[in-house]
Image (tube, rainbow, N blue to C red; front, side, top):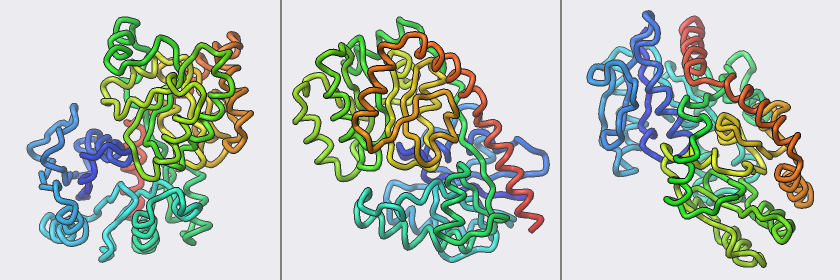
Length: 370
């Protein structure tokens, strides 16, 4: 079986970019019955551990967005013909709109259908125009969670038998970091000794306005600052305005994008990880924080209870008081903290990228039989 993996988004700093890169690292050479070729952005470093990058990686110029879109919809099809590929996998929710019957697509979530106002208008319109058609044309669809699969069935009418639920993995680099490394990262990003941590794109869906309000309610009596790590996405004005409005604004730290190599130490240095997102197709950062030995607060909606199990403090993301009370508990209830840390380490260890890749190969084999 010959498979072409379209990993052209691997160079971006999003969750789909990281997922694409992990598949490109693990899939080539994993199985004798699968010959894998990877379309890869030539300005992105090839993943460490890829066994034969000179043979398996086809480097493409993706610096111009329009050129990458042409590759997605025309170049990939021509490359499939040239390579005589049996399957082509699009791992970033949007597949080839020309509809090759060999297509597999991973659709991470349908939050743009639940609440278009969470997104820029042009982005929501693009997703609405492309993801539904991708689902219709794909031979098989991979979903990150049962929650995401349920949305595919409910909102796009995808039959259950065409969906494979394959959870994401936690990179082995995520583990408790030594204090010396934590101190280096604290200094590098200018964060205080004690802080709550959020990691992810700064955007409305992540519920940061309520997080800031909740933290502000406890800040006077809680000597733990709030650190928000991640690049600005869209509609960030109200989020930054909420931070400036807080009576403790000087203790809210926006540190911007954090290099992935620094994330394990930043997680490890945090007092607790807080992630009251309004909707997720999976939600990898809470698992990464757990793997670093940090207690986690997250939402009781969408895929998040499925992902973290009983090893995180789950709250209603619309309830500011519940978020505030949960943050206080993670600081002050030491036995509960220890329980979450122990359980979180065990929970995170169940999610590996190797397992994700193995299940993805099974999806390919099922597609070939259909």
